[in-house]
Each structure stands twice: as C-alpha cells, then as structure tokens.
Image (tube, rainbow over all chains, first blue to last red; front, side, top):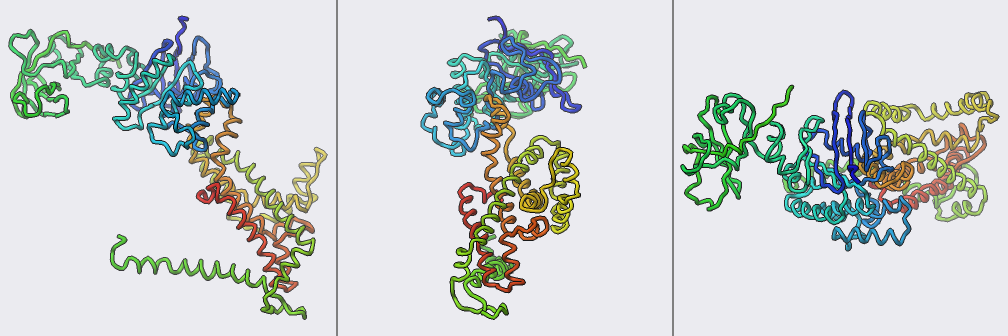
Length: 344
Length: 282
C-alpha cells in the first residue's frame, strides 16, 4: 500500500469572487497525524470540509485511499468528522449519539451496543451513556464527538479546531489524549487549527495555509528550524525578521533572514564565537518560564530584536536586565535562517 | 435598580393596566361565558336569560347526536388543517432557513407574512371563487378527469389550511434557524442520506416548533365559523352552532355551553403539548 491516505490535486474553491482555496496539492500518508495550520480565512477549514464532502470543490480532485471521491456525497465517504461545535444531536442520549453512524449502516443492535460501549470507554465516558449532551461539560462533549466518529472505524478522522472551545488546561490534557488515541487506533488524523503550538505538539507533519495556498509542508522541527518563507517564520513561533540594510549589517549578506528569540544570547561570554551586536533594552516581558527582551539595535535603520532568556535563577536574579540597560547580544551564524521571499 | 426607592410602586403602576386588562376583560369574559353556560332561557322564546343553575345545556349537548357529529367534524377539520399545514410548512421553512440566499430568504418571509394583512373575508371569498364550478381549479383539473371539490368539508379544510399556514411556517422557520448546520453535516458525515437526516435529526429537533405552530392552526380552526359558511356548503361547525344560538335562536346559555367545548379541547391539548417543551417555542 503505497497509495496515500488522502491525495489532493489542484483543489480550488471559490465563494463568489473569493478564492477561499486556490490550487492545493497535498499527499497525506496512511496513519499520519496531520495538521493544517493557518490564520482564519486561510482556507484550511474549507479544505477539510471538501475532504469530508460538505463542500464541492470548484476545481481539482480529492482521492481517499487511491479512489477518486471528488463527486461523492459526504454519506458515501469513508471519513468521519469531529466538528468544532461538536454537533452532538441534542435530542439523543450520549449512547444514541455514538450509535448513530452504526444505526444508519444497519449494524445489528447487539454489536451496536458493544461497539458504542467500547468507544465510550476509550474516551472514559462509559458512565455517561444515558446523559443528554446538554448535561455534559465542554470537554466531555468533545470526547463524545470523538467516540461518535471513531466508532465507525473510518479510514480518516477529520478534526475541525477540535480543542478550540476548551480552556487551556483541558486543551493540554486533551492534546495528550488525542495523541495517544491516534497511536492506538492507527488511522489517519487530519486536524485544522490556528494554534501553532497545538500543531507543533500534535502533528507528525504540518501544512501551513495562507490565503488559500499552502506555504510549506514539513515536520514540526523542520517547520520551526527552517521555515521556507517570511510568512511561515512569522506564523510558526516568534521570529526576528531581518531584511534590507539591517540584514546586510547583521548577517553580512543581502536577503531575508530569521533568527528565533531563544537562539540569541543576552550578554554572551567573550570567549564564544558569535556574531555580535549591542543595543538598548526597550521592553521587558515577563513570561514566567522565560523573559522576552525587546532590544533596539543601533543598526543603519532602526531594528529591534526579541531575545528570549530562560528564568534559571528566579525573579530576584541580578542578571535580569531593566528597561534602558545597555546590553550586548550574540548568535551563532548557523542559527540565522535564510528565507526565500515570495515573488508578488 | 431593584432596591431603588419607589421601584416597586413604579413597576406596579406600569403593570397595572395590562394586568387589569388580562384579569377583567380577558379572563373575566371567559369566566362569564362559563357561568352563563349553566343558566337557561325562559320558556317563551324571547331569549331572556334566567339565572337558574342547571346542567341542562350540557345534558342536551351529550344527548343529541347532531352536536356530537358537529364536535367530531370540527375536531377532525382542525386536525386535518394542522396536518396539512405542517406538511406544507416543513419544506417551505426548510428551504427558507437552510437553502435560500439571505436576499431570497427576506423576500420569502415577506411573502409568508403579506397574506396576514389581507382581510380574512376577502381571502375566504377568494377561495369561494377559486373552488366554484366555473373557477380556475375546475378549469385546471378537468383536463385530467378531475374536478373542483366544490363547496363542502374538503373546501373548508383547504381554505382554513391556506388561512393559517403562516402561523405554522413562522415557528418552524424560527426553529430551523436555531438548528445548527453542523448537525446536518454531522448526520451526513455519519452516513445518513438526506431523507434519513430529515427523519432522524431535523424532524425530532423541530418537533417543539411544529407543535407550537399547531397550537395556532388547531385552535384557530376549532373556533372558525366564517370559512365554513362561505365554502363549506351545508356543513356546520361548532362555531356555527354558537353563532346561531347566540343570534337567531336566542339561546345564549346554550351557545356558551357549545363554546366551552373548544376551550376544553384546547386546554387538554395544551396540557399534552406542555410536556414537549413547545410552549417555550411560541
């Protein structure tokens, strides 16, 4: 089986005069945990909805497991979706919600019961089978939605901003659970998110969307360490963008470059072989685990770099710098990422 | 706000007129109706009400077959009108809420509401014209070997169904607007074809709204006596019995007793639908 789980070719969707999705080519491998990341309006959700069959593409094709499904309706596709608002049926119990897909496929009662119980157990909700969705918390509804989709044993599970409505702590624990779940069931998970941290945490590979196009497809580490262009560098993680004269001054070459804040050393020791600069601290942002310093450099044109420093010694640390302090900074040349600017 | 001085007094003065109206004019009239139904008229045919408590009116209602026939006929007419309206309103409301463009949707809402501004009498007489022997319905049907139903019970049901249709469409439309599209997507995603989604998801979720609409179509049909006079031929409804007895026959207590029947039916109906949560959808 070398056929990819999902293959998109030239996928395009127009809403009136708006090109929501503009020629997307993408292969997603079997068993992959894949993220579609991008700002709102970048077309990622529309791509997901086209894979599910809720929207018909204006152009292009969709293959699932090597079979062209472009013209097929949602109910004829072997994929299941976890919706952003969970879309649980309010008039049914949790049990009936989970059984819905099996009932539609005329699976007999006993097997339906058994598989639904299994699915609910796998998301730790076996005790809630008789409740109505309105009696559950957001996190529990999320799990019911997962169970309702997975009980059908689809080849692909699509998740639309699956953790978007949950609070931060719950998100974190659900992220871990999702990842375990995906490993256990071993099917392809494709999820849409605007949260770059979530994409980096969960996904094997990430496609970054912008204005209906894919900017880059890569593993989380690749995406973070070697972003293909300024958009990706700016959207994934924090990044110091250097262009024009300041690039020439700080990097020594013309072009567009990016340096991650944590790769810049504040007050480095003399002995280290770094590229160096000096500047004035304009802003100190206390983040708990680390501090961000915004440092204004006396470059040919005003440029400020964000520098991240771990809080290794606590808030009373003498080495904490204040606003207005004169500082020196330095970085290893190999941590400067060359970016290809988009031709417009 | 609630603790501000004089708040209670101001609230009372604001609510007093409508409460007075509701209590005296509205419920009072209903109470007067109920009390009158236990009185009688004098034996000389002058229609003068005699205030003697008795159950003669109700005894007469139950004993004489024709009143039972009329009650059943009225009830079945109201049920028929409600069922027809529900079946017509569902696809219309579904199209308005889920398929039409926002522009078309606004136009359709206006189109549904507009007939409510036209006079009831004009609309009923319009149907008399449509259903007449030489009317457009006869003209349309005859090439197919069919004919106009003519004036009678069928015509009454058709006319009433037309008259009360907006009262069924509007709550259904409102109910469908509250139904998230994602539920329809989810049903399709889980393998259900559109008909199954309609049966398993749309209709159950819409049920309270449909029952809310049925309260209007059912009660309005129960009390009607004009449409049946215009298109109903010789048929009589409870409303006609009330009308004749309070007018020409001059037996107001008996008319009151007859008028109590639809009120009782409605109270029973409302008690039944209260369980569905429909009353929160009005």
